Image 1: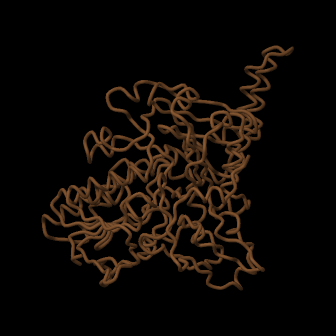
Image 2 (image 1 turned 45 degrees about the vertical axis):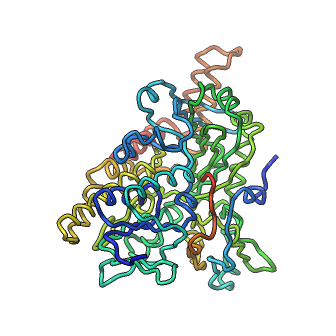
Image 3 (image 1 turned 45 degrees about the horizontal axis):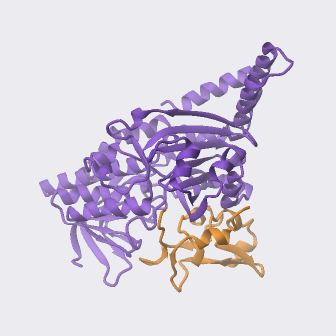
Length: 434
Length: 91
């Protein structure tokens, strides 16, 4: 391979590919270095792709990409030991015209997406691990790979090597990640015939549903489970903060196995056969754990930059949008022929002005809030809400006033009284508002 | 019926290198550690054998948890050489 390019992208996930596609279309000579056997071979997510930010790159992409089911129904379940409070929304509006989101599989989608960049002219080199950034003073001038004579050079290097970004650490673009800033997700893809999926989840043909699961499965640790419908399989997973796993000694795959036995989930999964197990880190630190996004010769995109909005299970869309912005900044610099430090900072400014930074800023206090109140939010709250709904629906010898007094007590009791509840509400509000 | 970690890992396709990409820097450090790696690792890469921490790097799914969560930063952690390691079919 020729050793000099206009731009090098490390990682062919949604962020790296979006950057490569943008730059290749801008007429640049782009190389993408991917360590997997093919793009997507190393990649895992829960399973939901949002249409919008990929549409900015490839109009009508969703009519051609390998996807599972467009989502018509989205749910939150709050579990205690045996019960489930279910809140959700089902509407054809998510599907009409252009579907809003889809379930998908990364080994298939990422591969397809990378092909689009390839067709636009980017050179994608797989089975090649980027081992370090090549520096000249404080400027990144290239990437060392594990191939023979594998140094490549470029005016711009886009770092999109994922949540466990060794290149971001080499740059010291942020302090080393800590266990309190990451969750570890374990996932099982479980095969189930499509008719059974549609019957069990109450779906029309080819439509999909999602369930986010809070409460008992995380056993008091900060975590979130999920169950999504694919064409002929289910994606079942559980993510737990790494510091909590360390403190409790819980084995993540055993927690997921235990979750499968919950009465609200057991029958949905019955007879489904394990197709693939997977595990991956999610950067959960939000804005406060974000690295410096750009410097002379470099930019960081996607998970490597901590761009995950955990509240809304968004990540791939932030990745694709950030990759596009980085690619645009490089194209602008290439047109002027001037790769100045200010030119690289244009990417950071674009992120700051976009939904990425605005959404992460909105939720920046949330990780600390969850950590501080985990016993309540992950344990006492799901328990109390289950008790409340039980009181509401259960008919016995007691008059309604007594049932409802019990409901009020349950709610106050979980937060340690009325004042505790007010304090919790006020802190919670501040945790999700800038 | 619970699926064992062996059964879980059996579903993953790997291309194994002959050399480990995970190396414990100093076993003596592990001896005095509570060793959370024995439980948090999603692929049970770390087990105790004759009092030493054994590294089954062939099982590794390259999540990076141990790189960050090793209490004493006692693991030399790199990605496997290009093309080696986990190769998800679904992900």
